[in-house]
Amino acid sequence: MKSQDFKFTSGVVGYPMLFGLLIWYVFWIDKEFGLGLKSFGIRPLELEGLIGIVMSPFLHGDVGHLWNNTIPLMVLSAALFYFYRTISWKVLGYGILLSGFFTWLIGGYGNHIGASGLIYVLASFIFFKGILAKNYRLIALSMLVVFLYGSMIWYIFPVKPGMSWEGHLSGAVTGLLFAVLYRRAIIQPKQYVWEDENYDEDNDPFMQHFDEEGNFVSESEQKRMEELEEIERIQEQWRQNQDHTL
Image 1 (tube, rainbow, N blue to C red):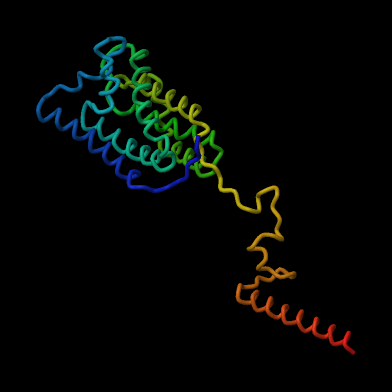
Image 2 (cartoon, rainbow, N blue to C red):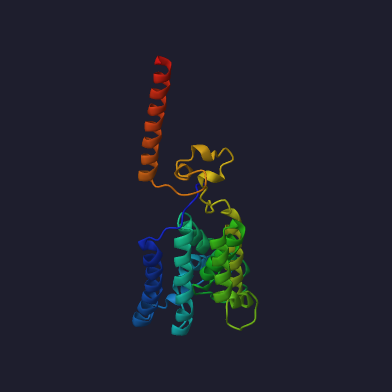
């Protein structure tokens, strides 16, 4: 897989904002018109509940639930689009599907809704991917995720009634699987000329700007020195010709 570079694009900010606006818009539409969209969540081991695999990330029970998911979703998806833009849509799309399917399998009972499963996919993926990549900036990002969202680890266990710990666990496992699956899609450190095993400093244009004592010589000075050497060479050749003539 081709390597990728860190690059800031409009999508780094635009897509997370779009995600945030979308889940708020769905929540508003549902409340305003009484559509009862929350019934389209993941209902484990029920055929009718399979539609929730796609729908559940956009459905939330109340404003508190929605707000708690909005900021992490936007922050983590922005990090995903900046540091892993070439695989970002795969992680998001497949992450929703796979974590939702796992939740459908192990969810037990009830109606599972909310973007928290996707948030766990992103947090888990970014953390483990940074560790596996062995790139100092990605490792730093992993540590930042731990600092900001490390407490999320407790919610993959049934510690709070009414919270879909199964969805959280499914998201965390999915993120880990993607980190392993896409472990080759890492940033390739830039290799400089002098790091090549066949590097020869005598043929390096930059090193030629230094004299024998290690002093830097600008192009104009180097050109002047070359002209002086050429003049001295011509003078020396002329003297030798004169000696032969005498």
